[in-house]
Image (tube, rainbow, N blue to C red; front, side):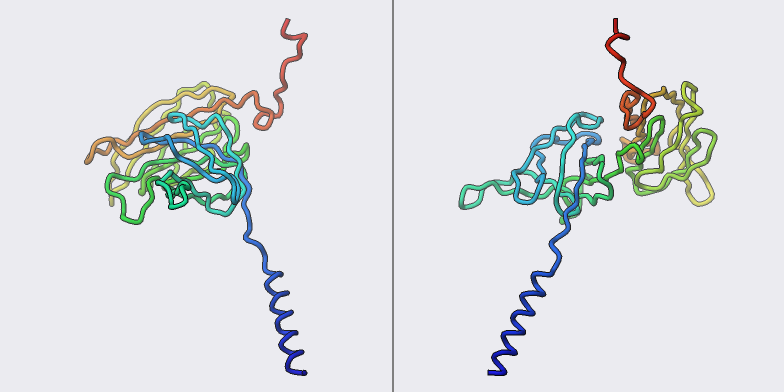
Length: 251
């Protein structure tokens, strides 16, 4: 009888221990998407919440998506394509990319893998950035380096090292409306090779991304730079001093 009581007590303790285990933590985020260069941008899905129906994404060429997508689920966030049917006639999905989220308001960059990706790699290489007013404020700029090497950068009269990935936001507040020089160099041992030289002008009310991409031709050192601008001057989250005009002011 005593041994039976011990067994029962152990079972009760085991059940209590299992019930006390924390559930898989779910990450909550709103995200938009931005495709880089060319690829098949149709037929890409994600699952908004565990057990929910798959939702298809809508891309805009070199621009943030119009839609903001809501996500509640495990981290990293995964994306899929349809990949046939199973024996029950249900759609099978194949993962095409995943990205780790670190903020609740995110911009996800999609870039197709190289011509000869590794056997276990996915179709897309993904990068996520904090796209909130704090992550990229009004009248600021961030560089996004899609290459594996750093670049020395001369911009707004400062020397900046651009590592692979997303730079810290750079304020343009004191330089708006000016013709600004930007120069990028690739350091090779004791020498430097200029890979980008340009002049840009920025207007108030916007925020900017400069996408740095590999050269178009093999063997070339001339990298590609694309500018993505978003007007947020009439968004109070980015510009608290702005207020919509009153009806009487429109007459």
